[in-house]
Length: 447
Image (cartoon, rainbow, N blue to C red; front, side, top):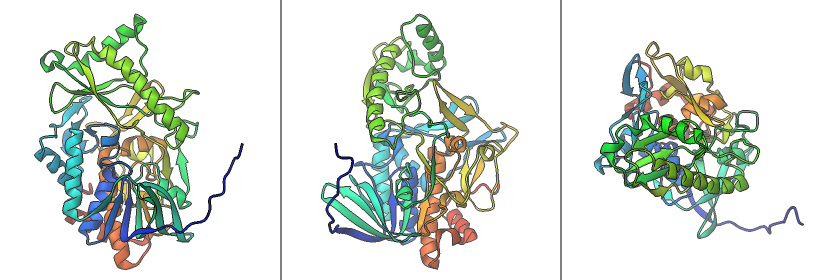
């Protein structure tokens, strides 16, 4: 059996040349591309699927987390800017719920995935972003060890090269940074990550009889398991209604490999196996859900297009956000926005939340610009769940709110770096902060 094959050399056609190239169309990529384009930069957003939204649509999350924080007992929205523009478009389409309470400490906000996709398209068109769908990134070309010149992509038209002056890695997996040789960490250091889940939605629910079903489902699970009728992948269920009360989202799967560790979303074989395991678990969970009052006639209306990955690579940056930064509500002089979500650790068999002191604390930590700037490579930024964080801190700042914050800051910083002809690390931070605030972002310097 051959271990390697030599590919013949070839000339790769150039797809285009852009000032800012953004990889990944999740919340970080959306915000980064909009910020750069609004600053007047020619901007290309590259997305592997035929729609935007990242895990929010491709993995069926259907729930914005981290837009709000519990500030001394007062729950308020703390992520603004590009996020507001997207939210207003989703709301205009009738696809945005009012925020709902979680654990009595914060809120999240459900949305319709179809409305999210349409709203994101509209936002791109309004900002002047060029979007390339169905394009899978495959590697980079380097001018020098510290500078990227091109991103290689695979498309239905064949392999292409995208030339750029500034690159923003919003891939979630840190793909672009890894290809560029930037150091990264994976998982908890003990061969495991935050466990993935496959999301699904049920229809046919009686909303009146279902009521606050999320309050009774845990007890029904314990009873069903004690009777030996079901074995659940994890203990803590997250089951909530969508905009229409007849449709609910279910987050109750947990996907492990043969060793019992979380599946690695950067391993092609494990990722493939995870898809089948997730659907198999969904079939079991959906059967149990029919025992919940109001869910007797429920049926699976949608299984997410892909397994929901919470953690893979975390790229090493100029600063690494830590667990204590989150729990102690840390402040940073180079703040680009805030994270108000607690630690949400998807551990073996359960989900563990760790909160700042509520209501004693202000309930959010600053996100420093330095966590979006890699150790090396002058014209690269990292934004989203692959940014520079520890395993524990990433469990908090991987959610939508923080991703919007990092993305908008990275797109704005790329514009400033091009204007000043400087490296990412040398961007004028006060100028960056002033620009972000002028675009409606909240940096958490007053509350």
